Image (cartoon, rainbow, N blue to C red; front, side, top):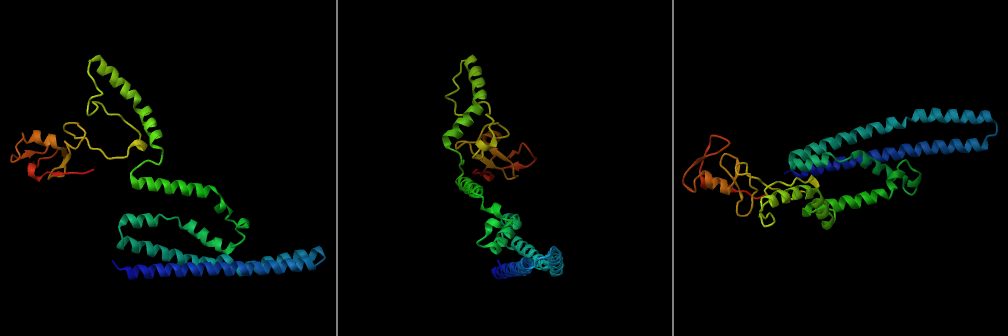
Amino acid sequence: MELNSIKDAFDRVTKKQKLSSSKSQEAIEQMSQEIELALSRIQSATPQSDHNLIISELKAKLKEMTPLGQLEGPQKELNLALSKYTKLLEKQFNPDISKSYRNVDFDFHTKLTACILWTGKLESSPYTELLSPTHWVKLAHELAQQFCNLLGESIQSPLSMTVAAGVQGLPTLLKLMNVMAGKKQEWQCMKQLPVPVDLDQEFQFHSIFVCPVSRDQASEDNPPMLLSCGHVLCKQSITKLSKNNSTRPFKCPYCPTEVQVGQCRKLHF
């Protein structure tokens, strides 16, 4: 990994960003000076005609300054440097990391940079919405959610999640109870329910595997096994297909490959 090239690209982005900010500050200062000068002339002038003349002169000067034209060039250079930087990250780093970096909202970063020009008077700037307390609430919620995702847990209370999942799965369990009661069978002692209980995605925290042959859910005693052809079956299904003979090859039920039991590898979800 060429860290020097990444550092050079980052330094170029920083340099272009500083140049864009300085150009913005310079343009704002020039416009402010012209406006302040025009206001002082208006205050000292008495006839209404003089006021209109001063305002028209101010418009002409601001048009000559073309502040948008002054800012357009540095902003294009900054966008170009940012584009090259993200492409370089894609070549050097994990593609998932580079994609997530590429999805960064640079418009929001530009707003934050522009806030520097309004230091001490942000309340009267065009970016007053950034001071809204709702942003801190959203940030706290997002940090808590990301932390819980790293732990593989829900951001909600475990008790509330259990109750909500139970309420959603209760109709299926009640139907199962009635059917099993009619057959005079005890379903609460079963290691696995004979019917699936479909829950929403928000209640699913761990990956599960159901064998496509036996339709049984994988467990510690019956783990998923990867065949040499790439298909996955549960251990008990492999034992039945090989007729409990570890040296006897068997045909994969999903392709013509002959598989040896010794070639099967245990998978961990």
